[in-house]
Length: 335
Image 1 (cartoon, rainbow, N blue to C red):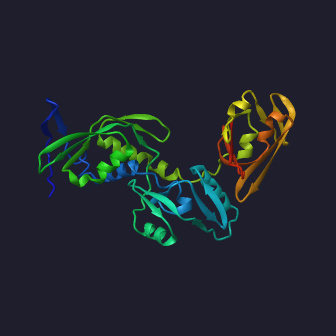
Image 2: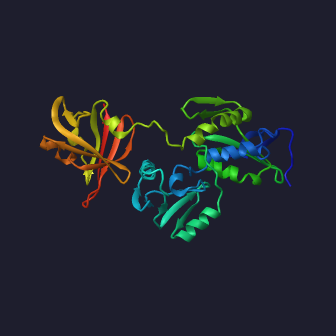
Image 3: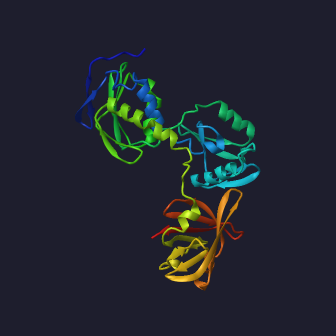
């Protein structure tokens, strides 16, 4: 049976012939054994992220390990990074009236919120995994600055310890085994990063719990698709671009150093200030956006492909060309 300790416990530990005093705070707010609400929030903050792929697996019980392949309304989609979930969403949004079906192509690997992994070979195993786990969405938009120190006390042995944790997984593992301790408390102050990367110095458990409460909604809505996200063609015609990465069997990015591209809304491309040096078109296929480039200069012939946009924002566009001789990759970055 656990004991409620109302005073600070002071123990002397002999480590390498040196004496260290470890003070373990045991009031109800600081003690994560007793403060279940804060403990559960810290578990969600430190768990393996499982929600980014919910549009595919429909659960926060586990995450689908990438790469993987899925069928979306009978269209196969290759998932190589989280940005590829956009292709799944595009296919689903192509019609507002149909019944959308997303199915995983087996075998796949999954990772649970406690960082354990499993191999799934068929639909029956997939359904068993769904029915036998905790559907808890992480609070990954907030971050603690590691390492942090947790002080623990075990009443039966009278053992106190100061444990330095260097990662989210280490914190999750310790908190997940909280019933091994009578007292478990964080050594403050610690650094806390908000969703917009603002750093806050946290002085005690009360302040930490308040911060988590204040920003939890930001984490939960962070997985929703923004309605006003910039479209790839809108990004392309804004500003001047250069090749920041080109891969065809080997990294050939250096071949395009010094080339600057301006993509005009009429389909023309200006290269290094020379108008009409190329042209571009856009098309949508199976929910994915494709760019087709053409250039007058032979030095740019390798860029004349049918490029699938795999990720984009206002300042970067990542593309891939599917080829029987091996995929090619092209990244454009804004100057």
